[in-house]
Length: 171
Image (cartoon, rainbow, N blue to C red; front, side):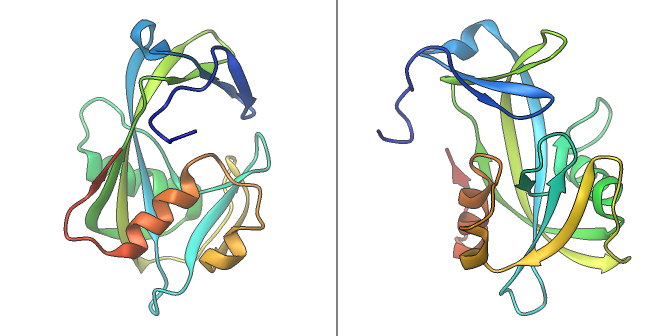
């Protein structure tokens, strides 16, 4: 199945606090939610910083929901600081990701189609630490990431950022 094709209706993936639902144009009935995530590379660009989620144990890029009144870059920096204790500088937008065939349904019934903005970032201050949303924070090579239980699509976002294209990937 190609990435842009819809999966069968109502296929579910449990992600802890929420479930991912798939179906033909299932996003029509959902609210849009803007999310931001950071691909934070080490100085050699060989490793990326990942966090392990408290709610489901999966590894992911630090990030989260953009709040009203903040820019996308501000949201990304805030989420990284909250989840890792690190202050980052946004280097560039590496990709924009969304699918009309996928929604996230939270335990309270809220259903959203996520529009995820992914930024490449570098650490400017701080030391990695845990938060109430994370059980681990560590650096991984892309090869090591292949063996980790990860949130869907986050490995693709790392590959896209490492490719270093002059324009952001839109998918």
